[in-house]
Length: 451
Ligand SMILES: C[S@@+](CC[C@H](N)C(=O)[O-])C[C@H]1O[C@@H](n2cnc3c(N)ncnc32)[C@H](O)[C@@H]1O
Image 1 (cartoon, rainbow, N blue to C red):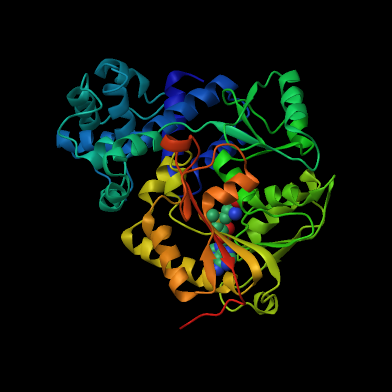
Image 2 (cartoon, helix red, strand yellow):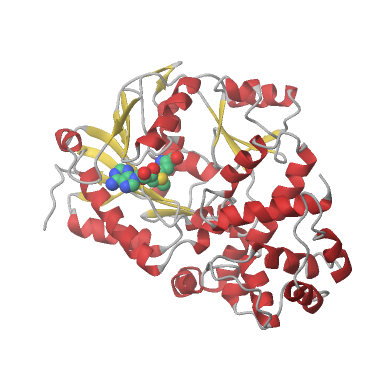
């Protein structure tokens, strides 16, 4: 593909991302599946350009607005062409003539620049991407409405934490102990020229060097490894699902953590006990089924449940040793992987999520047996979805008590434990993982709601 054709591909993908069609990685896969003529270097260049714009969106739009040039777009979504012109002119220092040559209007290339777009290229050429007039939310690429909450939590570490959330995430693998060991998986991958190192915290994790295609390797196809961020692996380990237990993964989705729980419950290559993956989304649970098969986790049951007052959930009252609630949330901890997600949520969405998390907690708590545990996790960094939810829960359910996270860590993850406290916080800046929160609540007597 020519440089112009690559630029056009990036513009089309940006339009699709901003239309909210799907997460960027899904859109990229789909785009190239339909364009077999594109080589791996084309894919790499287009993907890099796409993510570069997504990670600089606030700054690029700030510059476009500052020129005062009306690039005319009433859709409400950012103008992809304007953003591409802005990144070329500022960060890449591409001259207006060179930009005009890329936007040639020839076959497969972007349409020729309009007068306003040419003026934009002229106006921005040679400017630095970062500018001291930018407010922090623009300079560090996060929604301004989250600033009070994030500042309160991180204080003078705000910039360090936010900057780390705007970096590219590494690819982590979880070794499936139903089928192999970490050492054997490392060697098998190395034979296929995929180099890995052990993850710092998870005893089951391998961190991949670079971004090789893993889906086609025998190690992956035979279910020896799953792609899973180290943070997710730690949440599954902290759930402390053991052989013989009854374990419910209440918000299982496509089952990343279910697969890890299955491995924890393995006796040799078989699962011992009962593991049930629930979700309100049949589509997501359907995506779990082939993954279970590949992992050799045959006995896991999948159950589609209603969002509220599900009969089957009520029938399970007091039966589970462990109930993991990996709650639907703002996903602020996963901004490294989907930088566009940060712009999707509004304060109203956050309020709705908080309500939804509470309803889920109420239903899930009823399933825990006396002495059993409710594990609450979210990939959000906001206190409203984490510590504040736990404070609410403990008030509503006094029969539960939070277990010291460092003790559970010592028993399940091993190695140096995190600081003592009722909840665990992971983040790209502090642990090199995605951002997560986890609290473990033990039911001392049959849980009952006070109000
Ligand atoms: C953060 S995702 C789960 C990710 C998954 N545990 C994993 O490790 O891949 C949250 C999930 O909660 C599900 N969900 C939303 N409302 C729910 C409810 N009321 N009951 C159960 N699941 C719900 C969503 O469909 C979504 O799949």
